[in-house]
Length: 136
Image (cartoon, rainbow, N blue to C red):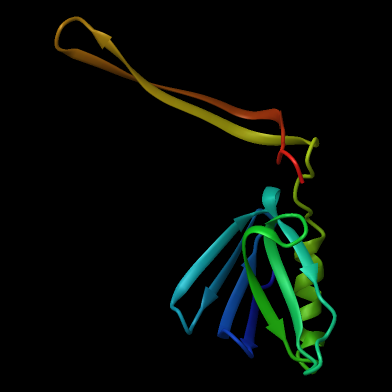
């Protein structure tokens, strides 16, 4: 899938990449990277404000809640940004009560004798689980 190189009017030059599983944003101004897995991805595109800027929120929970990040696009930038945002939005996050495929892992230790510890790992790949956010 293509990357989006975007001159954000608030955050400066950003590169956003999406491979269908992980959405990543790299920011020139803060030299930081932010990542979100598709299972938690919620995309919300706002209407243009009085300056013509459109806010695009990528968050972990519906209704712009939870962790995430924001992109801003000027009116003349929106035609270049919209195809990427639409592509990412086509991979919705899991809704509360929905079944989600996930990888479950557990690690621990057990005392063996007086001076030995046995470490263990248990991994169950791709099990179905339910997503719950509590009260919304």
